[in-house]
Length: 341
Image (tube, rainbow, N blue to C red; front, top):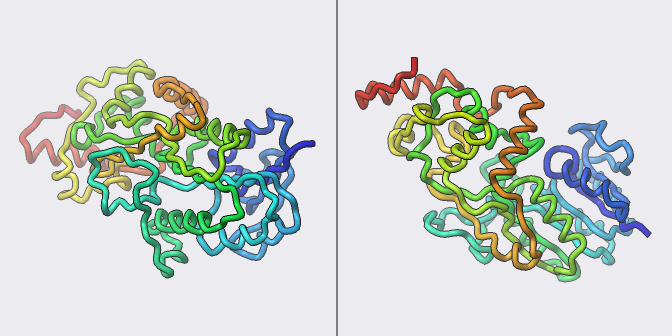
């Protein structure tokens, strides 16, 4: 008999990749619960439950026996609690996709790799119902707290870092691929020395798939799939795979100057956080005995995906004109000739 798996979300990014992988395995009877707004024509051969989990629509999962639940779409503590109240107590495993943002970064000095026992952010009642991105991490942390209180539930909490790969709608990783690909001069804050952890989407899918089969119970795991790399190392790897020369393309500008001139980390320059952002992933590699894809290979596969999309302009970050204006400004102030033409 096939095992019934309920996926909350499942048509946008990592969820989409997971469904595609699970369809290759005849062990599962797959159900998707989502609003049916993102890629509604995907997976016509998969069972659909259409609804908004922030409403009473979530009651549709009640009185059904699920073997597994994979939760990609839980962003609010109240709706998560209602989801849990609707679940049959015989569920085998609940896999919750949290985030690195759940950690309390007000205490992080960026000098070490964060382990799973590091403090989570605190979430007030007001923040728990806030709908802005500012409270995203706090709400994820509170969702984790709710899950941990469910003694009857076998739950696995995954905290990925910055996710990249096929179908990545955020364009954070693509922002840099695009700049290297186009061969224009671009800004690299602090010479690109600040390190960050990344999560390759297909490796996150592999992790979830292994957890569905494993006998691991009630675990919390960082799920970065690459060792921390500097932004410079990342763009250098991109250049190698794109067969381009980075010489004279990188414009190193100090963090102090950028901040002083209202260039904002993350918003204006993706993957720049003003310091290191590093996760320790030793626990998940040990417990699952999993081997993640070599970083260079992930870059190659991601480039192949964007080749098919014909290299559209990134939806985030500095526009090319704004970046050139910034380079011209710092060149003038420092009396440096960047030869930007």
